[in-house]
Amino acid sequence: MTFRQFAYNNVVRNKRLYAAYFLSSMFTVMVFFTFAIFAYHPLLADGQINHNVQGGMSTAKWMIYAFSFFFVLYSMSSFLKTRKKEFGLLMMQGMSPGQLRQMVFLENIIIGFAATLGGIVLGLVFAKAILLAGEHILVIEGGLNFYFPARAIGITCFSFFILFLLISLFISSVLRSGKLIDLIKGSQKARSEPRASMLLSLLVLVLIGTGYTLSLLARGGDAFILLLPVSIIVTIGSYLLFTQLSVYIIRRLKSRESFFWKRTNMLLLSDLSYRMKDNARTFFLVCIVSTVSFCAIGSLYGLQSVVSKNVALSNPYVISYLAKGSGADAQRHAEVIDQTFRKHGIQATRIDEVLTEYNMKDDAFTQMIVSESMFNRLAARVDQPPIQLAAGETVAVTPFQLQLDRLDVPSTTASGVHVRPDRLIQTGVLAVEGIPFVVPDEMYARLGKPAAQRSLHVWTGDQEQQGVLAAGKEIYTELDPSTESHRIAVPAYDVNQELGSYGMILFIGLFIGIVFFVSAGSFLYFRLYSDLDEDKQKFRSIAKLGLTIPELNRVLNRQIVLLFFAPIIVAMLHGAVALTTLANMFQTSLLRESLIVLGIFFLIQLVYFLIVRFFYIKQVRAAIR
View 1 (tube, one colour):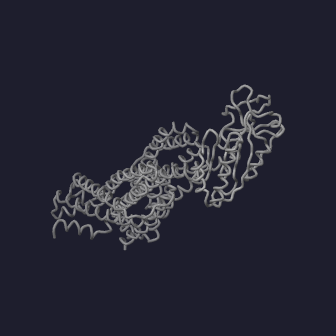
View 2: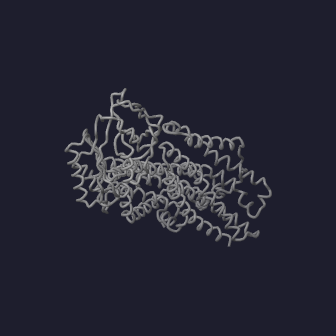
View 3: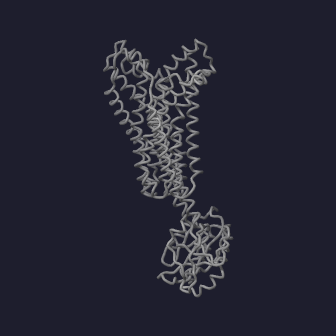
């Protein structure tokens, strides 16, 4: 048997040992390939879609590739640490350090080739689903048809051949065999019990508490100013949380004899402080990576939702048309819109109103003022609540969230009527520019002759009925939506276009966030399995003293739960605070979006935990029989 055959058989005959590294590598290839399928789709590559989308996809693709390099490198390094005893046995049989490095190089090339091939095959399986998801998120008309991604296959094969070659050369060049006795003993060296500083443990509460408080109290531009310092504070606090506070809490629990000696708590706590100390950096890394994933996807999803809400809230009509004066052009344009609606089978009711503007006494501009009865007529047609004004009361109307004391508004008309607003209401009933005032009918009658008039034509109905998007596009093409003489708005079409713009960012962020999150899960997986042999030996010895299978399951369950969910729960808290800050900054609620994002990630982690727990406990139980 040649040396190459030996390396090949070493991989093939030890599938369980190599499975974790192979699967994590195959996943990174699959993500890169599926993204490349989308990025190199003919509809995008030929420039039929916005060039910004194409550029963003290309940039994101290489960002995923760069992260894949470090992820595969970390996976390989973790994988090699679990093989110290194997390397020691091989050296006992006469293998030289050079041959050991050559073996690792060949094994990595074999696994890399298999992972690349497997990732491409899986990517082809999921290609259609990815294209469907992409066309939905990016709001691409006509859809993205499936095609044979020859270019994506070529780019992926070449890129990951280079990646695995570089990692193989790097690992084999820096691999140190170490002393034979150290390799044979592996991780069985005696260690002193970890200690933690009470001062640093208290500092965790101060740092994270300060970061959370500053974030939750921030409003508007203050959130951007505090972003960097709060991130640094919370990051330092998170590191100390896993390296100091967790160990300190465990030591305190061990000192409470009533708790320590209860049932199987002794088995759980006996080496938990060692595990927390050993895994502290991994926990910290997973926490930060997961937080970035939560914040990136949650922020993008939240921003997209905010944009959709604002566009819909600012104009509740199927279409609105506002023109200067009431000339023939306004009537002709209204007829064009009616004909277009009939052509596309859209059911909508047209409402015509005349809006008036009045000169202000001390200002060189006019102010739009609407009577209470007119406002309520429009509000009733779009199921909005009417307003009831007291005598002499004035309100300002805006579709956006503003504060009345920040408005620079006039106070008195040229006719001497005081119209400074007493309060501000947020509604889209008046589909106009600026901030019009609504006054009681009695006050409106005293305003006198208006300085200017505007024609308002609005169509009420279901904004989501079939044909609205096509009609909106046709109307915008035939009638300029924004000129000196008129303004046209089709909210459903505008939202569709906005979603298309934000969709590209969301799609890219979703991919990168998933890569980060699954990579974080893989980090935890490698850390768990690095202790597998030690757990087998420990529980094999304890089983001889009477440890039952249910007790074993309970201890292992608690250990794995802490390993998988401790950093994720901390990351979810960080993410929840960050998304709340974002909501405060935009003065809106993102509770639904935050729950959806965090809930989905938690379910993914739960499924991952259940799968890993099943196989891990199965192997430990098999070792004690």
